[in-house]
Length: 251
Image (cartoon, rainbow, N blue to C red; front, side, top):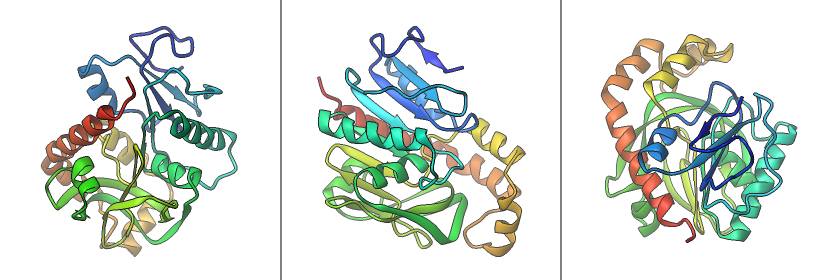
């Protein structure tokens, strides 16, 4: 069933924000907590749960697209519809924020390319912000941050006109801005509960990735230790990003 906050299940009904969720285990997390704390009416629709994404985002002020274990290049109708909604949001002046798979779908929707990296990133890993005005506006003044990653693919070519904001040793493109939108490769919406659920069922690819890529894929003990250390900083960065996103919502 879709998760509805402060509204009925019918489409929109006064909601300010639409959240597109792909898989049951990759929910809004801290994004939902932040929206509730701001008193924002929002709706989340989950493709794996059987929710149909809407035909239009007309009437919303913000669109958020979450992550998931699928590839952005998979032949799935819900992914193509997400891309169509991203493009419509752009045309309507509605800011879009993409998390991991969501950022990859944003890149594809605007003409970028997504592909599998030589090394995946899983765990609490550093990113480096560049010195641009857009990077500071979205990510704050700190030049580096430790964020939660779980991805094998990335947006290896940015869309035309996009500005790179941050990268890492393993993944050159960690965040990009395009007009009023932000695409991220990392999971700024992460919470300890989400990490616990993912680590309980990490999938078949994870154990081998730990063995093959120790520099960029952390073991379960390292991830759990990192959560205790880095979660507060992740939430502070999330607040900065979400506040910057909200400042771009149309009146």
